Image (cartoon, rainbow, N blue to C red; front, side, top):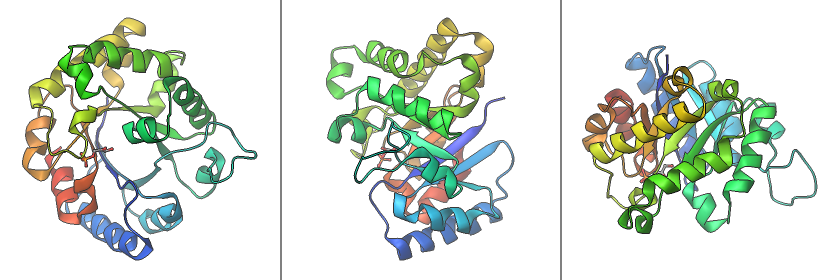
Length: 253
Ligand code: 13P
C-alpha cells in the first residue's frame, strides 16, 4: 500500500547552524507526535548540510533527500555532485525535476530522464517533480503538459522501478506564490496522473505510487488538500523552513 509522505524542500536556505536547529526541532517533534509506519517524513537540505542531516536523523524516522544530482556518474563537471557521493554519506533519496531546476538551470525532460536513471542505478530513491505553467493551465493544456513530462522522463522505466519513485505534482503557478491549487484541482490532476500510470503500466502499479502535491502548502490548507483520495501528502517549500509549520503539516496528512 502506498504511504503518506511529507517532504520539506529547503531549497537554498539554512546555513549549518540554522540547519542543525531545524533538524533538532523536527526530530523531536516527530518523536512526540509518534509518526507511525504508514507516514514518511523527509527533509531535503542543501548539499553542504546533508552529512550533518544524515548523522542527526539516524535514530529518528526522519529521512534525508538531496535536491539534485548530476546525470553522469563522475567526471569533469566542476561544481556538480554525483549520486554515489550522496549514497556514500548515507543519503537515500533525491529530488529530481523541480521546476526551479527546469526554469533556472535549463533541465529538460530528456536530461531528467538521465538523472532518474542515474539515481535509480545508484540506489537513490527519486522524488520526481513536474507540473504545468500558468499559461498551460489558462490554455487548458495542463493535463497534456503533465502527461508529456511523465512520458518523456519516466515511461522508459519498467514498472518495478516505481517502488523507488515518488511523484510530486507542483503546478508552477502555485510555487512560492501563496496561491494554492484548490483541493479539487489537485485531486483532478492526481487522479489523471494515476490514470496515465494505469494506462502505461497497470492498476496495481498505479495504486501503489505515492503522489504528492506541492505549491504553497501551509498548516491552514494542508488538511483539506491531503483529504483528497489521490493526494498522498505534500512537497513543502516555504513552510518546511519553520519547525512548527512543518510539524503541523506532518500532522495534517
Ligand atoms: P512553496 O511551498 O514555498 O510554494 O514551494 C513548493 C515547492 O517548490 C516544494 O518543492
